[in-house]
View 1: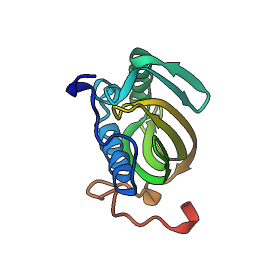
View 2 (view 1 turned 180 degrees about the vertical axis):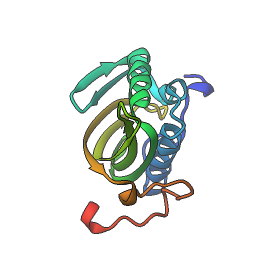
View 3 (view 1 turned 135 degrees about the vertical axis):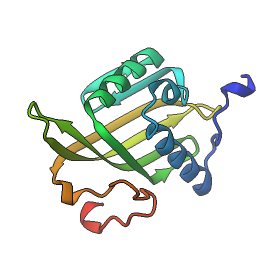
View 4 (view 1 turned 30 degrees about the vertical axis):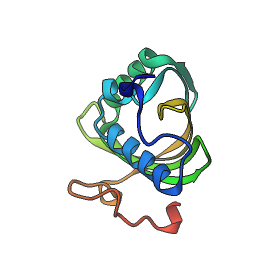
Length: 159
């Protein structure tokens, strides 16, 4: 394993390193750059995203391109849910909008959980995601421009 293959923090995780891994993933996904995002995963990574199954960098990049073509204004927050030596569970929220034919925006908030398994080099080899999309109004949005997704308080109603 070369130094360029290592994606710290690496397992075994502590509470601090697991949280750092979650926030690094959050920041990476918020770039909406499939090429960069794919580098955090093993070349033979296995994913389940809702009802879709994929493996390897090329399938992941293709999925992410399609995802971010649809999900305009995408802004994500990931929170550490639980961890073990080489596994992390994440609760997440993200908001995005879809444009209708007449140009109006319909905003959505996606709520979900992810289950991650890591190799010893810190790259993710397995990712499973379950999520639900809820239509929201502009007024109901949390992640408006200028809002820090990390400090926004999310009520128990949404947790």
